Image (cartoon, rainbow, N blue to C red; front, side):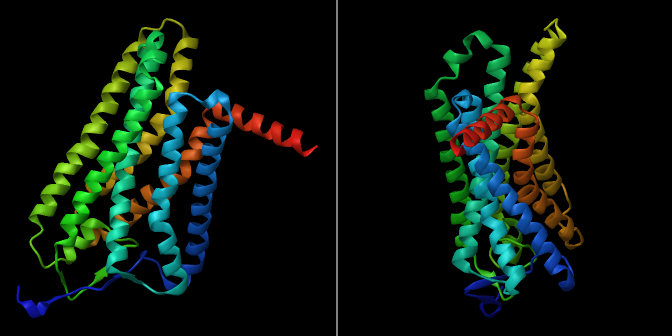
Length: 313
């Protein structure tokens, strides 16, 4: 492509959600409410786990990190979307766009690895209950979280560095509400084959392999549950896994739905809707799933309420 058709980009334009201007106020209020629910709900989970000694276990150690990741994940995209809807200013600086892309990829990958660690924790708890306290010690839990952070950082940094080497054409309009990596690659005038190879490789390493590990863990869990003769034992085992499975289905369901959609322009609205699902809806639902379907969390909430009532007297 000729040089005059390229430009040194200083900013991009985020076209936002495919909604009519007269609907902006309604959707602004809706997404603001969802974002505040996400932040408050996940911070409440972190607070409960921090204050209640009954929740100082490996499962809730991972859950506290997952809650923090969900808050951060939503904060990467939703505040900017709300500001754009309120001010009608669609611009985002080049550096801000690249930074948003990095943190979006980072927290997506971190979410994935934490869900995998939680699946392994449930596998050890149900399939090897007598060795649970020995295997899932503080050292292993810390190691799993640390490795999750390092791998997520490395994956996101790889994509971001490859993104910065690209030049962009005159059209800087991103048909999305955040700086989506795929949308940015479509705007590039450079050869993006290396970026696409990195996306495929990281997709296998960060999405497919963890999903396979989760499926294997729950396959072993299912086989162990079927060997339990008592209905009470089966219900107890299922109650410890139900919340995590629900979150896994939400997370991977929207991710798989997004990446199996055709990449034509006619499917752009569907891509945005799928993105809203896993960037806004899923992080908001996670606290409800873990609080409403988990007796330990509900018990911790009751104990915290009684403690607040006691100190207020």
